[in-house]
Amino acid sequence: MTEGRIALAGYSLRYADSRRGERVFLCVHGLADTLEVWDALAGPLAERGRAVRIDQRGHGESGAPPGPCTREDLARDAIAVLDALAIDRAIVVGHSVGGIVAMAAALAAPERVAGLVLIGTASRCSERTAAWYERIALAAEQHGGDGLVRAIYGEESRRRVRGDARAIAQVARMLTSLYSDPLTPKLPAIACPVLLLVGEKDRMGPKASQTIRDALPPGRTELVVMPGCGHWLQLDVPGDVISALDRWRAKEGL
Image 1 (cartoon, rainbow, N blue to C red):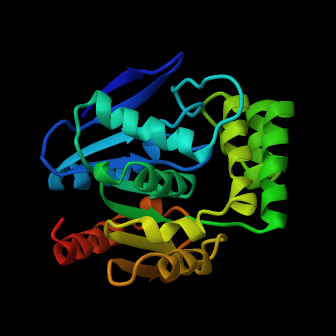
Image 2: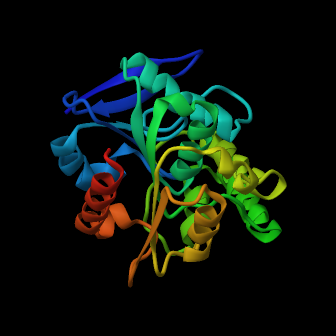
């Protein structure tokens, strides 16, 4: 596994790349995480192809341009990584916010996305949830990483966030668009196979994944609800994630 940086317009993205295999998995993490959240899956994915992981803008060791961002901006970051590494197509594996980015990438550049693996994500949100995303953004802007942790994980959390809190705030604020401009009505345009994985106890709820499944074209989408699991399936049950991925790939010929 090698690491490097990809220079974009005024900022750069950190990546890790196993560098071998024709089948490519591009892993995109969620809010306030880093590419290390995929550590338990990186080895098994590399055995099945080429595993590329990125720190999204503002997260971990990646930079970010000033000002707001959209989900389409984040999707362009993901496609820019493929461009820089001379990768024609990839199975995009997205967790939480990373799943939103993956769907946006499949809509913007369908020729670059061979399939989607969406873990604990959503295509829309309520007004109440949008307000929570805005509170996260404000907490990050006013109190830095500690404010970000408290807003997301609670006052007692010992978690630490790596990255630029103000840039992460812009990613959190982007999520409010799931209320004002949901992805759900756009999903019928996604033509690639999709695997949806969600924990039974995920606080975003299996219903969010069911909404995505129901909006996608019939016949090319599989939903797996994992009993007793929460939001971070790739950390808690990586073996189950890989097993589901293998079954899905075999069925879809990926």
